[in-house]
Image (cartoon, rainbow, N blue to C red; front, side):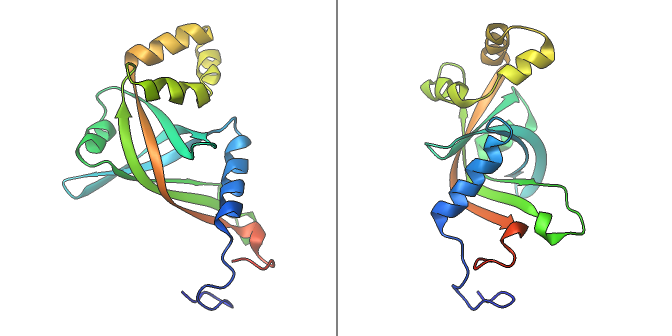
Length: 169
């Protein structure tokens, strides 16, 4: 629709440029970001924070979660999710940077082929270093103790203050 100086359909950043910006945002942190994950069960929404890794080629997100958490129960009953990441807001709109992802989550256990695909893009070396164990030890713990979500992205909304003054909204 209409927004500030733009008429409906004007100033919209092309999809490929939106994707390039999202990849750039994730790349800054080893293709991993802590995001707010919104799930819903029985028409009751809940948000939690979780780390997600981006597979820029397949355009999917992978998250690792402790087994038997409420968010996994929610996803099992309703796979439609929303995720949000944003840079801390300040008084300078040009610094605003956030994304909202809407998609469908799939639960994967360690036996699933997609679990290995997720691990291939997930920067789990950070978790190993934080726990002072080897990458192989951490990978074994992940396979035993974690469930992976694979988020197929349906829609991404990008708010990027650096676009102010450009031809794009």
